[in-house]
Image (tube, rainbow, N blue to C red; front, side):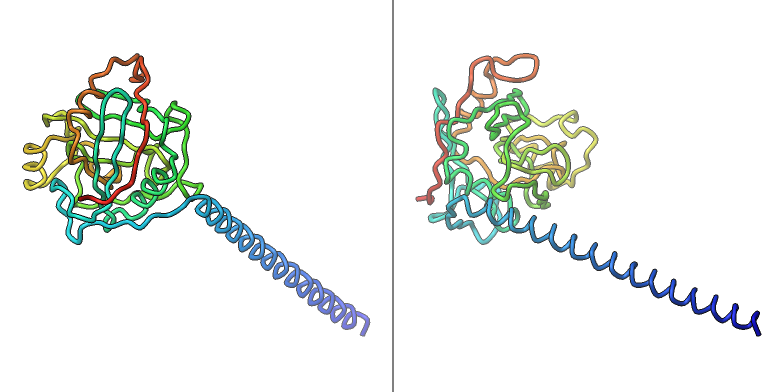
Length: 257
């Protein structure tokens, strides 16, 4: 009898312990879910607060993508005025790269880029700007965090393409670059493959095929190629930084006439 009572007592003790452990596990799981939910909510709130810092502007782009054509009347364009160099005009591809377009247009509209330099310049390659620190290490998006790449087979890093600069996939912030290379060679491909149609476009317009698929193309220069080339030919140091600052005086957002 004593043995039976001991066994029963042991079983009851184990059941109580199991219930207690189960309750603790459920409580721990519940607390983890609450913490995750709070973190997600806080992150979303921060992004919303960052976005609310900026005034927005309506963006209009062509219904069909034709990268190298002039913008249609009423399309949203950017006029980039560079001190001592002149103006460059860009159109946008809002349908294919909505995040990058919204980010750039909003930052420009709010004067974010005014006074910032093209801090990295490489002739026969590209010019890069958009970093308030001028080091290539700064800047952030309108959401206060990095955002993902947006790639399309229809949009290529042709000469004059306006692209997001990044430090790897999905690390876009405020920095951008403009492809400047005129003549495409086998070296320009850097091992990347391209369709026959894409190759024909690179041969016709210039560009840098090696950049395909790794950087978001969200705009295209259509006026001011001479300014682009002048900037690309400026003298630089060993880190490709211009010896004399190349300053973006302003970027105005307008409608094409």
